[in-house]
Length: 340
Image (cartoon, rainbow, N blue to C red; front, side, top):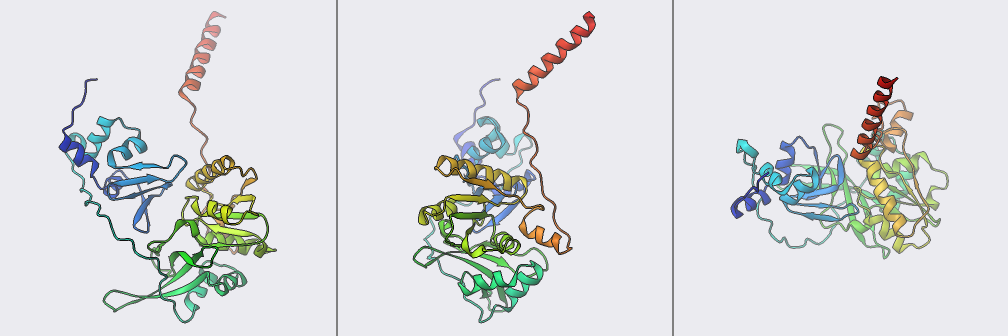
């Protein structure tokens, strides 16, 4: 195959393709995560404009061309060609030039005087235990926000799950819409520090790890015995910064129970975090799986409601070398049959 030449102008255009627009045209599904987007089948990868980053063990990122090579395994010429629309000449929307945005100080959203709506949502819709929800509310780890639209015509109520640093300063907040019609919003407040997401500090040496705050509260609701004695953290995604920050801040934590979602992205993330923990000198790692897709689905099933089933990890693909060996053995077996 001859060398494929691309001009600097073509390479620049390819590198500035908006990755959200590109991925959606490839049939990929994306999930909003603050100002970024995550791939639904690989939560460790985030994109914003023409930039991407993999928060997994490799912790690498870059621009559009590098992403296509990394994610799809394309060669450099194939990646550029794909981003420029190939032979059809299809053009993707160009990403706006990423400006250095001023850092917005982290602030919590205004609180509603009562928590009636949030309690109704968490107890009636998500079927959480009242005593568990009340305990988190009393510690100001959970509250109901009251936000007004820019034109002042509408008010919005959301559940806010707050994360504090060891000094008691709020550093992170995850917002979850509580409306039951349509798809509700979820995401982290601007300038949240991912090292201090929603968590509970206990005195034992055990910490349980979850993807989302409601997963965490669901697990506690299902396993209430002495729950306050243990520690829990919701990663608000699948990146592991919050877990490792807690291990650093609270040295008594030596046993980790990974309780991420029972689907392929969740199990992949749990395996990645387990490897990170082993490398960091934490050998006591246990992976716990819900019976259904996540711990809240377990509660739904237990209460007779329709629940989303778990998604099992497919068996690893056989290596090319292994396939060739099987083919060779089959040929040799066929030859023996003919000789007989």
